[in-house]
Image (tube, rainbow, N blue to C red; front, side, top):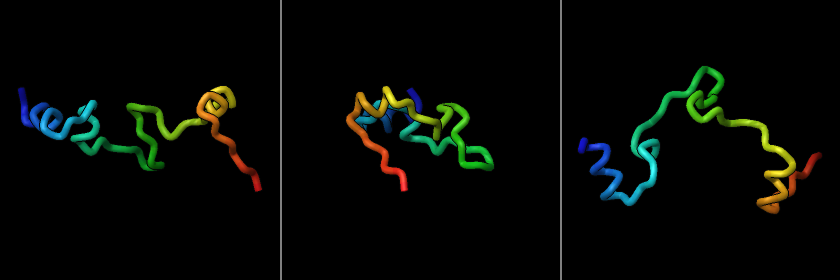
Length: 54
């Protein structure tokens, strides 16, 4: 395996993304993960998260 895989094992990481700095576009959006993205009400409810609006 490559150095990146060895680091994953040594650091007990689940994703190669934790090793590399993946690029973002000019707006700060991660094109591989499509993040940041809108969150649905269902997702918020599942995690018991409430959004306060000013």
